[in-house]
Image 1 (cartoon, rainbow over the protein chains, first blue to last red):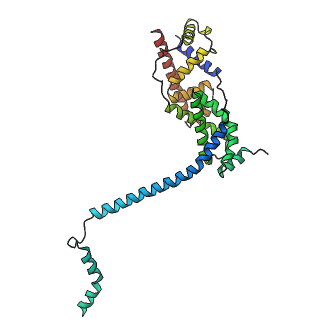
Image 2: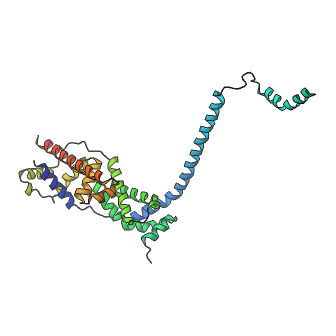
Image 3: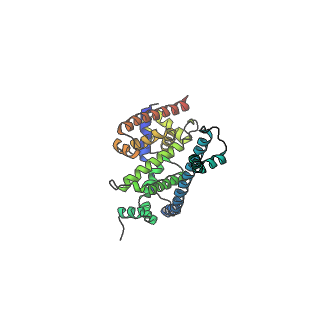
Length: 101
Length: 191
C-alpha cells in the first residue's frame, strides 16, 4: 500500500470536510447567565481565598513561636519559678534602695 | 446605535457582564467551527465553546486591543481545543480491526487503484477521523492547522504560542506519526 499517497488522499478528504459553524439555540444567553452568576461567586472566592491564606500564615507563625519557646534553651537554667522571677523584677528597685541605705 | 467592539469590551471591563453577549453572539460560529475540528460529540463541542468564552471573560483584562479581538479569541480557542485533546486521549491505542464495511471497501479500492478511491466519500472521511483520533494531541493540532486548514507556520506559531522552529519540528514529527498510524492500519488489515 502506498502510504504517502494514502496520507495525501485522507488529508484531502479532511480538507473537503468543512465543519459546521452552527451555534446551539440561545447559547449566548446561557453564557451570559453563567457569567452573571459567576461574578459574585468570584468576589466571594477572592475573600475566602484571602482569609484561608491569612489563616494558614497565622498557624505557621503560631507553630514557629511554639517551637521557638519549647526548643530554645533557657538562659536562666536554675530559675524555673516564674512567680519568683516576677517578684524579683518588680521589687528590684526596692532591694537596691535597701542595699544603698 | 450599535456599539463598537472596543466599547463593548470597555463596558465589560467596567463590570457590565451583559455587554459580553453581543461578542459571544458574533464570534460563536467561529469558535464552534474550530471546536468541531477536534471534538466529535456535540456535548463536547459545546463544553469547549463555553470554556473558551469563560476564559475570554476572565482574561479580557489582558486584551490590549493592539490586534483584533477575533485573533485574540481564536488563540484562546485553539489553546482550549489543545487542552481538550490532552485531557481526552482515549481510543488512541485501539487497533484498526473494527473498520466498518464502507471503510474496508474504500481501502480495498485504494489498494487496487488509488485514483478510483474518492476523497469525498463518507468512508474516507470516517477513516481520516479515525486516524486523527489516534494521533497525539500535539500531532493532531499541527496536522489540523497545517495540513487540513492550510495555515502558514507563522500563524500556527501565533495561535499555539510555540516558536516557528518548534512548529516545524512538530510538523515533521506529526507527519511521521501519521504515516506510522497508516502503516499500522495497513498491517492490521492485510496481515
